[in-house]
Image 1: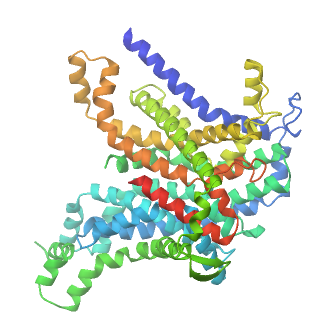
Image 2: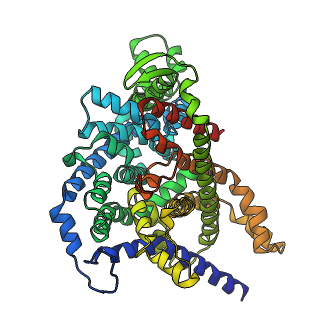
Image 3: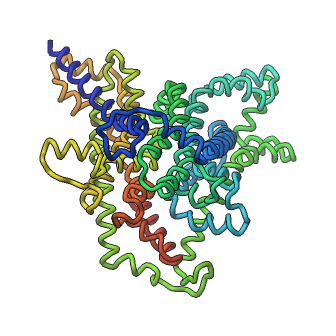
Length: 269
Length: 292
């Protein structure tokens, strides 16, 4: 009896928490279906007019394409660099190893706005403003320390004997990595990739500073300027917001098992 | 042992490589880890470390837009210690403290509850994680709409239940409360996942032993769970505090960059090149101090 009552309370707490998490977004969705400007909420008219306006009459499509390109390329860059570095940190013992790892960690703790001004100055000087590659480089540099630590934790959990066995059988070091370690590393790579993707998708400060031209903006920047371009048309803004949440949400729901597993493995260490 | 394994062992320890005799091959083997780390270090150094060093340099010199003049000592730091500087600092600290307390308690409560095997736990866990996906921009817009004086459901609810007429976003305390709420909503999934992972790593034998000895659930929590996850909680607290002190996007957009001049530290950074560098610099120092 005691156990049942406690279980009931647990359901209540978790259920309430889920509601708190979801209801605001559900309300946002309902708001996006409201064709009036949200002021006279007596009408229960539902229409997709706001979505049509956002998709066809604004630059949202272009923003989505930009953000996808930047995000995917950042993920690739970050994963490759992080795998290389994590492999070195995990499989080798060399002087300065821990120093480098801790140094990277401390570097990742710097606040974004502290480097904003210098980065803007360099980008302006090198005439790299409003390009894809400057943002890819900055986002990669920002996510590398965290990703490197995460992948190192995963690599540490993969026994080195597997690679040694492969080398004994005549495999090259790189071949051993690709054929044996990578498949085992897959959950960690997926978790890290998802984290980086969501970060790039949601990033605002760097995005708004380094690319302000309209056809190069990212989704988060576009949404912000949408607010000021169109005044307070809540229906359209809500529609834009919902559209901007969809890609990371879909990815998340497809991959969330790997993500929780990945974060747990890293955190336990 | 085949030559491959021998090579691997010698590669793993550069000193053993050298002991095998000097040669170009041994040199290449010795620097291999450094080469592998080169991309990572290159990225991080050029984007993070070098600009920060540059910032420290600029902060001590008088500047005129992008020209760097003479040494200025602590001159650039003076505005930070004025009255308005202190007020901003107080506002930041309140925000960070309140957000920390709320986020941690919420995450702790949820983690303890979710650790037990409940049916449907997977779906509920996924739903609870959703606010992590939402960007700060969307969170700010969302909470701005929720608390809107005209049609926001939360203001409507408060009005109908308590009878107050509130317009949260049009005064300072209200804006602060709104920011804290939005911030906690957005960041508790992260804390929850980390704490949950720590709880799940506690060996269950401890709980079984406690149960045999007749411990209540509260005693179990106080004597087993809390001490075992104390370090994780400390790490989460540090990470959250860092993030909150350097949070810009959420306050900026929630207060519409001008509609309500909620003074957060970094917002005053958007005025004048040389004040910008000093404020960013000192704030970063504060963030570093907080981590130790």
